[in-house]
Image (cartoon, rainbow, N blue to C red; front, side, top):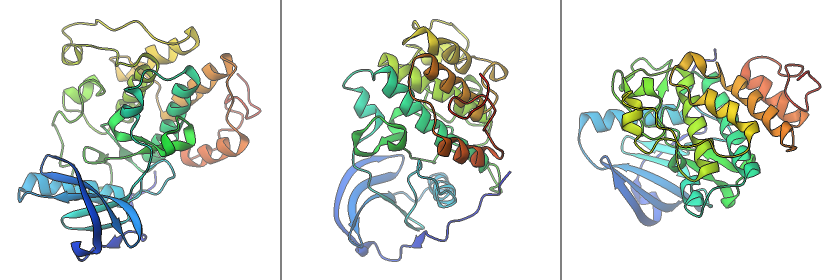
Length: 301
């Protein structure tokens, strides 16, 4: 397991006056979001607006986790101060905005899920679980529904194994439609919780809605009324597995879920991973994937 470190590329933000053309976007939980320009480039700015110890702890937690990450599928932290976090502004909008126009095609939905799995494999290799994967926290660079366009954002609810204190310990952190049942009961840090969220995201991409209309009732165990599985039959075993209430019945890891998705895509006649992608993902997984059954890697089924 790699230890969480801090990127030397993150700069110290000393004066808010460095920000130009500031345009407010939203304010939630004591944090204001803005679009701006910083040193000639467009940026997304988060500013802590309240003097509340809990809000300050959450804000600093997000900054520390974001500063430790470096992967093409994750929006990097550019600069920070005790009250501000600066990220590059990604043109193209969120996955939620894309889904407001209707469900994605099977190829697009599985491409987006591939991109998410690439990023999640990296996170889990760093000892980080996101804990709030949802369409609002997924950007699509250029508005494209492709694996290389996926960008994961917002680590405010994340769990980092190597930080000295989990400030969210024991709390019901997450978004009901996308959070795993164990998260609802306060369990954090299990990588399989993120895999549940990815299963909901794939479902949402295919159906245009998440699987449970009454998400809180499902999480509390009051009912099991799930919408009919969307998409072709080849994807249904993966969806059933990822959406299992019991984490032990889900894929045991992001590489395992990736393999199931790749096999389903192969059955559907969609493109396999390239050799370069298999090699890169093997590095993230801590060992070679070639020969482990990934379509396109020369391995078995």
